[in-house]
Image 1 (cartoon, protein in one colour):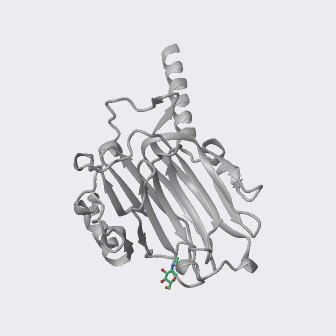
Image 2: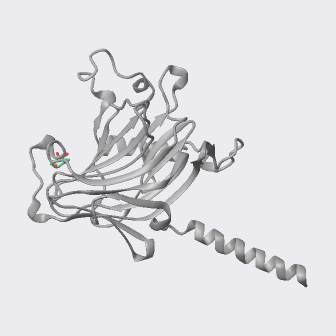
Image 3: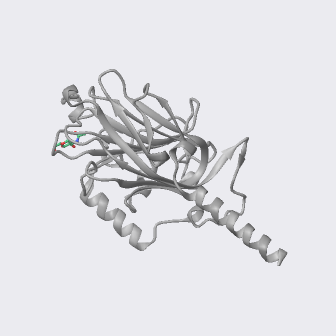
Length: 283
Ligand SMILES: *[C@@H]1O[C@H](CO)[C@@H](O)[C@H](O)[C@H]1NC(C)=O
């Protein structure tokens, strides 16, 4: 009797703590770091919004640092005439030899497509841009943008479709981010000196404030704290060794064929000394 009572209690504690851990809560996972009230956590922590006006943009960052993970976030981007605005969503480690995994959404005139700009930095060096248009209007609704980062690869996903893979090619002399824990950052800011058609189209401040929204954050990740990872060495989370299966590779090819608008690996003019080494191994 006593045993079963305790057992029931234990189970219900376990279940309720699981539920707390799995429900996304922006109060729990993020801090608004700048923007003087322009960044807001709403609906009991279920929603976050950033805004931008002529005086300032805004931004937030994760409380935790991560070393590897499968990280999902839903974003709904600035609607209407968003030309000149940039919504950046990225992982980054500190210091001058940082690593970084970037999604940046470059706004556009009403009816013209957003550009999704991606990049990977290792030891402070990027220059690995790939840009895409999307197969939907990213301002009409929330869509899921994910990063899979494990010791073998980084995969960028949009609504579950892989759009870019950066493989671990250390054996070929290409650096790979695997030692520096990263925080998640996002910001909404004015970049009309370069963002839309190379800076030709300026932000229309009569449309301000510009607002982007976030929900359903989910991190299946190794949290780094006090010099230690929450994952043990025999990590058996499926994402830790996840790779693209045949379907994923087909989907990646489809996205790259139909929606990629810039690929640094095809830009030989930019690299007169020869394309970066990893380009020989990627699509
Ligand atoms: C904006 O729309 C133009 C015209 O369709 C397109 O060429 C461009 O890639 C879009 N994005 C940006 C950021 O300029």
